[in-house]
Image (cartoon, rainbow, N blue to C red; front, side):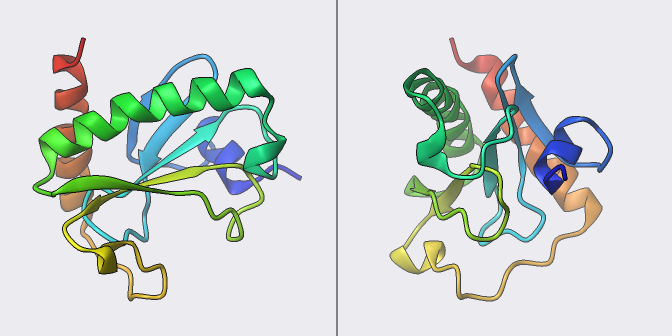
Amino acid sequence: MASIFSKIIRGEIPCYKISENEEFFAFLDISPLAKGHVLIVPKREVDKYFDLNSEEIYGINLFAKRIALAIENAIPCKRVGVAIIGLEVPHAHIHLIPLNSVEDINFERPKLKLSHEEFEGIAEAIRNQLKNLK
């Protein structure tokens, strides 16, 4: 059975897409810890991050780096944190989370509730910053 992320990648479930290439897909987390919380997933459905092959791990990190730089330019934060947990969805993924303190990456905190307009604005701001990256 396809994961929710595979359904998002195929367009069966809507998302706030940030970017994609042949192998990877980035979109806003709809239960974010912070404004600008992005998920990076491989298009190939793999349960665990370290089950990705070496080329995929290299590629997903290069893809995530560009997204993280765009987040830093779009969202006021000290840095972008990275988390790989993988318990909530059986599809390898990376969390990129704008941070101003260590508490901003605490997954036990209540998640933000944002409006459709807020999500759209955040996604657009990050996409605009991606255009400026070389």
